[in-house]
Image 1 (cartoon, one colour):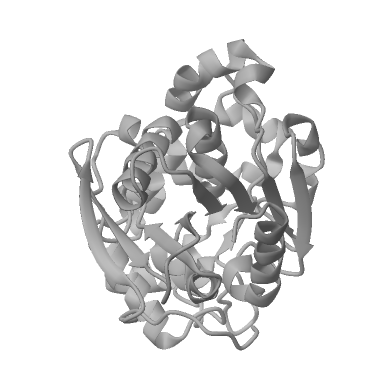
Image 2 (cartoon, rainbow, N blue to C red):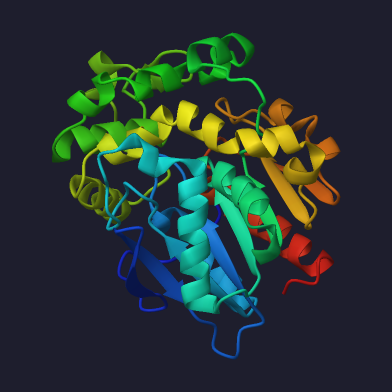
Length: 334
């Protein structure tokens, strides 16, 4: 992992704020550049992550003179974690983030959006639901898939995308029931972030999901310091796994809410603003092949690839940041 400036868990370069939207309290990090910002960028994390997942990008984007907003998504960290699955639909989250952006940047102000993992799915949908608010959008790892006119249940989707098989387990009760308490959270997060056993065992694969009997054999993750792991564990202790795993239970809600977009066709499912897709060459959950046919849904799409696993934000931060900076320069967004 390259040496690069990054946020620490108690970094003074960002402020902690909260806002209540739809009755839920969101926590977000806010970073302001030293001089008047030239724009606002909103960064959206995925699973199992928190706002701190963008720690290598925030200082870099501040250096580009951008105001940076990084929320803990619904269910995560210091943001509320409601029980109801419907709360976590991509439309609800997009609407929430639009309200957050208006609160920070001003009503009607355009923002730059960046997402990773589930955050990538969010920013693509935000660009459909609120196109007038988007100056540019990029996703790391997560390809754009347009709304569908016919429902595909997750159990059928894995016949098309077998790399999503793990999602069936995450949507069920097992992981939520097992990953409880500080020690199991540490084992779980270490395994998801590349930790291995003494014989190179892994406790998570896209085919099997979480392999419970191996979890207690997993050593430290190579992608976080001990301080960072401690911070993640403490943040996940706040709500447990119910909220984060609710994201994997939203398929029917997303379909019904997005059906009007799908039925409207290209007018509502095409992304017209400058867009960037950064794939990770060793991402087994979201392999680069999934983005192969994205271009037809965009007016202006750039594609780049980094040599990294799914955790490209922390594994290849220099390359990721370089691609983001190049993209922002091209679309005159700096």
